[in-house]
Amino acid sequence: MLTANSTVPPRLRAALTCHSLNLIGGNWSPAASGETFPVVNPAAPGDLLAAFPASEPSDVQDAVEAAHEALPGWSAMPAPERARILDRAITLLEARAEELAYALTWEEGKAIAEARVEVRRGLDAMAFLAAEGRRMGGQTLPSAQPNMLAFSQRRPLGVVGIITPWNFPFAIPAWKLAPALITGNTVVFKPAEQTPICAMLLAEALQEAGLPPGVLNVVHGAGAVGRELVAHPLVRGISFTGSTAVGKEINAAAASRLAKVQLELGGKNAAIVLADADLDLAAREIAAAAWGSSGQRCTATSRLIVQREVAEQLVGKLLALAPGYRVGSGFDPEVKVGPVIEASALARIESYLDLARQEGASVAIGGHRLSGDGYFFAPTVLTGVSPVMTVAQEEIFGPVLSVIEVESLEEAIAVSNAVSYGLSSALYTRDLAAALGYARNAATGLLHVNCSSIYSEIQLPFGGIKDSGFGGREMGPTAIDFYTEWQTVYMQG
Image (cartoon, rainbow, N blue to C red; front, side, top):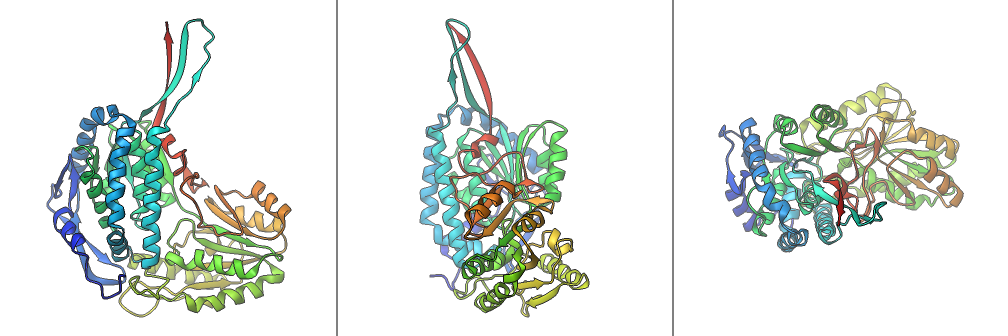
């Protein structure tokens, strides 16, 4: 088992030595500029993990051209053959699961137990989506004309750009790359600059598994790299997970040339707790969803909307659970809450807490950064929050839970819906009629009854509405929809 004193796994050290580079046309190479950027451990920012290429427009151009050249051969390969390559990559990654979990905790900071869950989830998503190679059918329908065969089939988009965030550096790339590749597209992939190591390990395994040169290209760097990728005329689709502001920018840029866009964006997710709920269950689930992963999940529970008559009791249960959410290095097996990703994230959370106090909220627990070198913030509960306060409207992306008291289910749903986001929500109740009313009226893409806002399964669609998502769902059979377009064939005999 990994501990805080673990040394870097030998294979990971070797991979970093060889492959802390861009992957273009099957070759690992530095940026054209020769410049690099540092990757650090957010639990110990003085710990330099690696240096990756600071790419420039010419690197993106080379990667897109390599993907374009590889497209005819890859799209012509039968989908079950493409699936075999993905399956071999999954086998390699499963054998390296503990190494992946180490790398994930090292560069992103989350607790090692959560890192292992993320790796497993990413592998499961890859396996499910690889199997679409044998399920990717169209329809044959009766024609109105004699001697006419009429059917539809899916075709790949072409070259697609994939831009992923730092908070799930293995799972999100895995569940984007698998459907892109299985449907016959070639890819230029830009991982977040804070967490490129997991992306490198994933690309390395796909290359080892036999992915032809140019089918997957990886270009590292900051936002300018992503903008260059979005603007490239040969890139026919862009799948992006990240902030709503950046997602809107990508959508506007891609729309000017009619490129397809898939956006998974922010959330301001609510847990509604009614007076008849199992309060112990609700407290356990909400604490994990609010404070786990340091609140750095788009599906994290950020608002607790609770019927007034049980609010004090439920808050008391949350406060009793808080000491169990130990904060520190993710390699410590007793730690449940690792660091936030960087100094600017820590400052952002602090600014929201200052604003909450100014607007009249009270800090029941936490509300401050912790001492030490890492970017640590205490699990926090805010009480006295009104629905119009800034902390009740904007995504904080930290371990902060705002408590809003209401009188009824109808008021609770109205408050839950009264934000610009619509990703995930949860309801805790024993009342079937209340659960059905919530399912009819809650304006989120993911709904949960007596389970937390972070819960999802890979065989079902994932995504939000309003400012939380656009352009199609990820995961489940619907994941291939974004990466394909329909052709209709009329064949007269």
